[in-house]
Image (tube, rainbow, N blue to C red; front, side):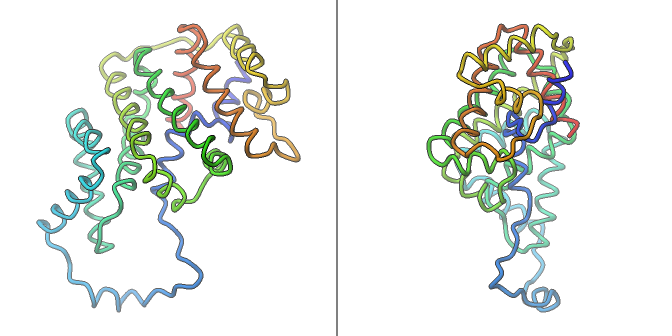
Length: 273
């Protein structure tokens, strides 16, 4: 059990990817070294404040600019109207301050971050199928990244830049949309069902270790994932990414009772982080 709790907070636990990737986009990008921003007073003088109607129109256009995310925003408004109103209010305040809308990828990421902040504990109380959908969506993203760019894959495990996220999300919006919607639906299901599960047993942890070994991971690599061990030198990008994918696959292959207890524990850890 102690090893599994370490896993829940370890830097390489990228089942957090569904949250971590989305939070990355909420971080304002750094200005390039070659650009010099005009003084704030000059910028304000150039820009007329936007009216409420203009803010609403600009936000609606931004939210609808990526068809892949339309279903997510519609479901968000339906399932959590108070949180949706708070999120869109925050979006408008930012839009007013900036004078322009952000990308649809940013708004999805920020919506999930705000929902996680207010309702994060509920997702761990969902039924087995919605829980699995969350992790299946994360696995799909990781597999796509592993095939295309292992370095970027590892970057997301340890913290990629906002610009990197937005480029990756824009290129893989169907996968990102599914990841966001899966978490939203699991949160709504957890709100309705409120299932309290027991903590994973030592036998559950052993089953996970066995499943990882069966996927070709060494004892050291298993300890990196479950025990929080760090390696010097670290594993190369391709290998680190591949053992991450193997980790999510191993979790999925566990018996439902073990799998759902581990899923719930790890989602609880994410909600507290």
